[in-house]
Image (cartoon, rainbow, N blue to C red; front, side, top):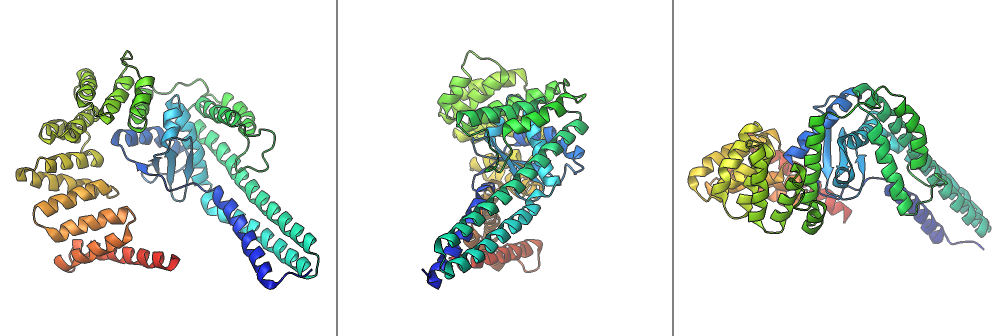
Length: 457
């Protein structure tokens, strides 16, 4: 029985959509929020620097970005950025495990795997199209069942081809990770331990372990059997992680758990009888989240008794005071934290916020200076731009308040609002000046984004 052309067209579109959906499944999700924290970023930078150098890259050009997601995952999505879920750090036992993850992801960057993914997609799409044409011809000739079988087999072959391509890339990244750890003088014990953790998770989720054909990654057991021999043969196998780095990692891990977990879970994992520094750090965040500022302050003060000038403990003390409605009391701790981190932009932005929150006009000039310096060093911080817009508005400089607001909305991907504020800023700022040119740039980018969004509707 012949099938009308409209039905064949529908089949064609559905099959292509099926393939593309399968391809998209293996791409990393980018919808989660990015977590920014000065101390965490400093530790990740320290942990990754020797691996980045071992990979032949410049540490100044490679970033490890933390994604707010409790699951274990890390990925690259173009450029020289490693995205790591917060759950990866929270569920790791030590710094060495996370270094193994970073080494693997650097293998994807150096291998150009994101760019080369289009090759695998192109091959798979070609198989799909050929099978569709053959299937359509068979259906049109009256062999309906045979035609549908040809198309289904083609789709399965195309998906299998793409998944095999992806597994090859993963194996290549595994091998590169081994090489980078070796060159950096870092043990592979953590890498193996992390793969075993993933394998245990697969067991708990009842993921079949006898066939890797339908997977984007090789089976964890397969990876372990290959990597175990390579890592154990390394002269670095029994080399311990630097004690100072491990201590800083444990602080960050506890801090992240305190920030990201429910307070009850944090207090269960770090009971008050646990007097270790990481435990106190985690509890300080848990008490603060639970609206118990006095108990949070007791934990922070106990930490500062051990390390009176620790900038990150000072930062937390200032944050607790500020968010408890005591901005004036927060200033000394935050000012010292800024000084001791050489004006780290994220801490400086918090300090600027505290200066503004005092509602004292005498503090506005310092707030503007601090915030302008912060966005100059790190212009990817919407919070800092928001605070800078607030201080400009308080000082009566509305055009620059609108420019700062445009910067904020541009970073947040809110193109319509970025465009409106950039245009308003241009009307009040002298044409040709750096601020006017910046407003013009934002307006052009935002307008293009708005037009693209309209085309998609």
